[in-house]
Amino acid sequence: MFPSRLPRSYVNYTGRTFFRLLFTIQGIGAFALITFGVMISKFGRASEVIRPLVRKEISRSGVKLLPMFIFMSAALGLLVIGQMVSLLSRVGAVDYLGTVMVVVIVRELGPLITALLVLARVGTQNVVELGTARATGEVEALEALGIDPMHYLVVPRVVGMALGTFALTIYLILGSLISGYLWAFLQGVPMRPGQYLEQLASSLTWIDFAFLALKTCGFGAVVAMVTCYHGLAQPLRLEEISNATVRAVAQAVIACVMFDALFIVLYLIVS
Image (cartoon, rainbow, N blue to C red; front, side, top):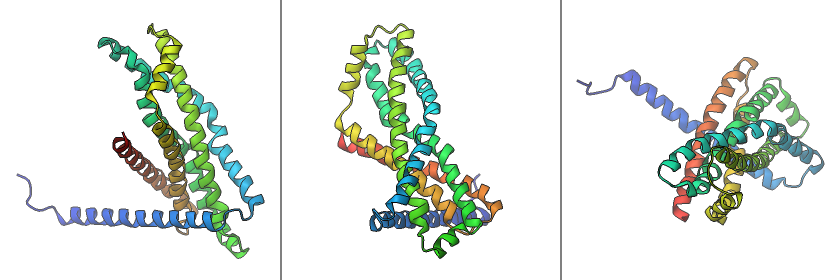
């Protein structure tokens, strides 16, 4: 027999969790609106200072992660092709191999895996760097010098991580499609490169390219917003930075999954 009413402790815990979630969404939303407002109102200002910071973030979120993504593209091609070849061969549907690669790699796994890896490698650095700057008074020092911390610390990270995530996703997808064909060839799939490319081209539409650009840039911006928010949202002490990093990673993963679900719905509506 189940109890007719939940214990008061469960109700209190659920209520606190729910309201904490609402306050977090409100805080991140307000932080994002402020960031976009600064980007628009101060567009082009102090470009000789901001542009090098953006290039630095693109390098950190893109170029420096490229060796890891080369390995990941080979592994992802093996993961998908290794499972799909045996499955499609049983039902005589090997001709749909290119279509499967487009749906699995281009639309879903490629952008999402890239976002999660950028979060793990770069997003955590954002929380640590900004949390340390907040705890040691560097943010207040910038304000005392008349420098907007949002413009100097947050905007370059948002722009750089959005562009870096977009570039890394393209590299990961191309590498996965190439390695996928190589693994299929090694497994004896009777498919010429021209047939494989034809399947890929017939499965891709302009919607895939448009949504891929929007989704990947959005992933980078979401990761940057959430991690920067937790680094700057409150006066942190140095010993609190680790807990803030854990919260930022968990909330960024949830935000990326929800953002991806939004695009799944858009795919269903458009197609």
